Length: 151
Image (tube, rainbow, N blue to C red; front, side, top):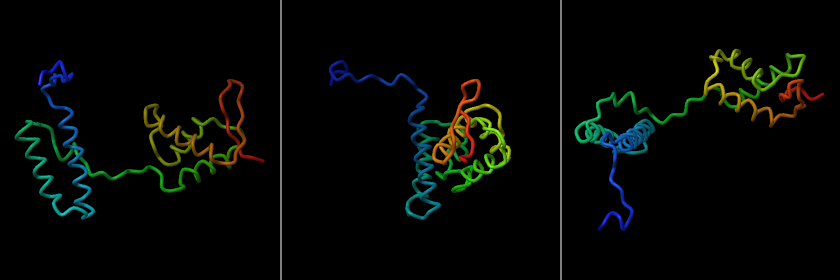
């Protein structure tokens, strides 16, 4: 089959990043099955994946560190973020922006509040909680959205 006719290209990378990523992801899924006991062959599958990564592909990283069990790590328990946001708004006298509320919530929870992707994600989570609550939404002098308890 000619390559040009079917638009098939050769792999241009020799490091196999996509294959390694897929195998590490599959290994993570197998670790989950092993933990839950849903797949009887999970232990054998993990050993086979490890052999392929090391012997066939030549992966030199720490396999057990790179592939973790697929367990969702949550920062807040169910309803905890909503309760913290309501507590912040209950204690304050003035309207607060979403970022201010997020920083207070993170300080209350003992989380780092430096500006990064994490804080962006947490601000978005706080914003989603604020939108679902019955609050008064306004704007401050700079045009930022501020939130206050509904009276």
